Image (cartoon, rainbow, N blue to C red):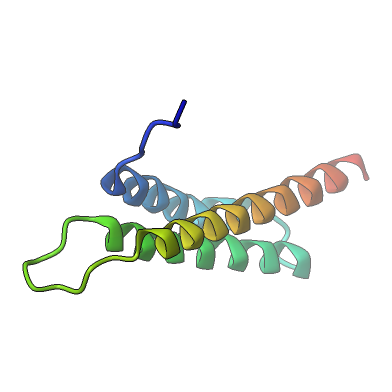
Amino acid sequence: KAPPLISADFCIYVMNRVLMALPLWVSLQRPALDAVHCSLRLLASSASRLQVECRKASPSEPGAPAVDYQLLTQQVIQCAYDIAKAAKQLVTITTREKKQ
């Protein structure tokens, strides 16, 4: 069974929420930790890239070049992987800091 499709508009909405949450996350973290800054940069850049890729999947104007959905799918998967990686790094750092 094929997974349900997620609309490009919903994807853009979710990435907007992620980008809006980043300043709050930054304010809750120790600013001196380079690892936190690297993970937050990866999260922000990946979320921004995912927004761009999702916009490509939105209905385009007449005369616009055709979308290569296979390539677009690969790009979206890579962005999602990078977001998950950054989130895992942040959780790991936060958990380690709370234990110390």
